[in-house]
Length: 259
Image (spheres, rainbow, N blue to C red):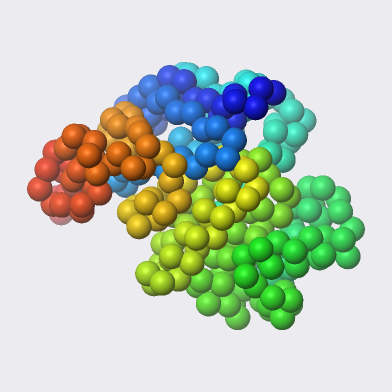
């Protein structure tokens, strides 16, 4: 693969559920070592975009390529091979309650890569160290961890298989500002040091400014603005301006359900 090629290319992505159009012709690119953050209100298609890229949903139209390979409609074996390129940090952490911290981090290594438990544990400890967690945490259960520690364990699990692409779904939701900043720093370091391509979904503008190289905003299923994070404050786009400043007044109107 050409070193300058995009890791992910999405063109004309469309997805509807019944009469509701969720994605209406989305184009995005992510290069190796680049961090794209997708912003927008609830129900604007952010999660659906990621699910389509991951193959969890089948788009109605458009193309998705990973390292130049068509990612839509793959056979199971081809899909399994491609999925090894991905890591995922879920919004709630999604750790297995009955497993210890190291077993959670090593889950994909043991189950997917058939790695021996002793070897997988060593990898897990290495990844935990990368997110500033010591060996003393490895034998704890998720219920014994704070919210910030849970997120760090989830990040360690996301990078355990040395993925080439990582998705972050609301990585700082539910965290206090200081802990959220710690997570943001770890995400930025991970992206830089491992040279992975990342796509993040977040409503937290502090996270956007800390982890993004470029930002894409979705509204009503359309990509209404995309550009370097440094240009977001001068986008001259009223939707972007309203969203990043959290203003009630503007072109974005919240739907209010009538009782």
